[in-house]
Amino acid sequence: MAVQLLPFRSDGSVVLSLTSRAPYVGSRRVCVVHDLFPITHPEWYSATYASVHANLLRRNIATAEKLVVVSPVVADEIAELSGRRCEDIVVAPNAPSSIFCEEKISSKFDLRKRFEIPPENYTVLAVGSLEPRKNLERLIRAVSMINDTGINPTTLLLVGSSASIFAPVGDLGALNNVVFAGRVTDQELASLYSEVDLVAFPSLAEGFGLPAVEALACGARLAVSDIPVFRWICGDHAQYFDPYDEESIAATISMDLVRGSSVPDAERMRDSPRHILAEFDWDRTAELISTVCLGLR
Image 1 (cartoon, one colour):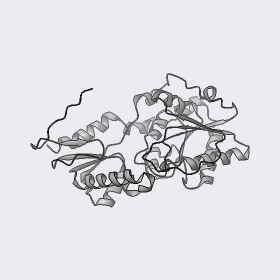
Image 2 (cartoon, rainbow, N blue to C red; image 1 turned 90 degrees about the horizontal axis):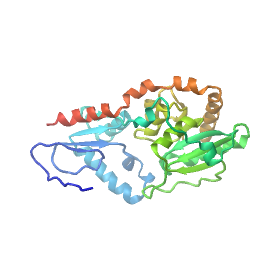
Image 3 (cartoon, rainbow, N blue to C red; image 1 turned 90 degrees about the vertical axis):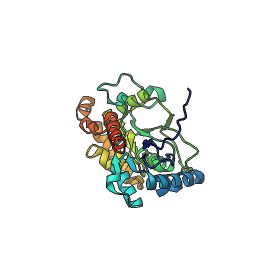
Image 4 (cartoon, one colour; image 1 turned 30 degrees about the horizontal axis):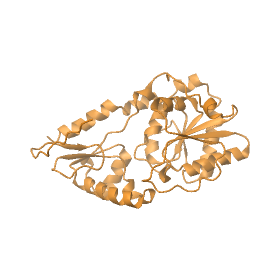
């Protein structure tokens, strides 16, 4: 695919960057900020990545005429960090693909057959890269604690990958009843959300938390970290735990699994919080960003 490099125009044109790595040209710049983690938690990344991206992020936050953020949580963090005025920051959230919003998932992943999961085991899905912020090591140990009781045998399915930009995760310990599925397609992920007994998100922090919205759209039961962005996204439609406390994670997941097993699939889907998903729509987000850009012309 050919890429056309456009010359910089100093005629008042607006430069929109969909990441926080915008070029430093002109005064009419709109920058989308997804999170502040290279600044607030450099220990979660390699030293080089954290240094480079923290500097870029700080400069863009300070110099862009308008900032678009993916959640009120990021907006509050920017205001506290930089002192930017609230009117300079617009919340335009991410949204799930239409694949996750279908009333009926068109295909089955058949995870029990594919990964030879015993029929008596509960299934818990976690989605995310193998990086410190996703907190998967505590989730793995929490599921191990559940299995040690012998009461609610549980298989944990991990979907995602690792990348060299992240700092190493801790010791994962014993990996009994843990399945590493690696990367999957959106269609496969939608099927997994609808098939598992519970979806768990133990993140220490998120700028938005798109997988949680995807899971809600598919009618999944959720157990998530008690952090501001998940409270904003999930409201009363998730169970919350302390992400730093493995006993809290284990107890919340175990109770939700038992409660969820008594709820028929049809009732679960009927009660799924699809009404809250109206706030997370790509057309609406595009309109918000367009309004910001046009307002600078």
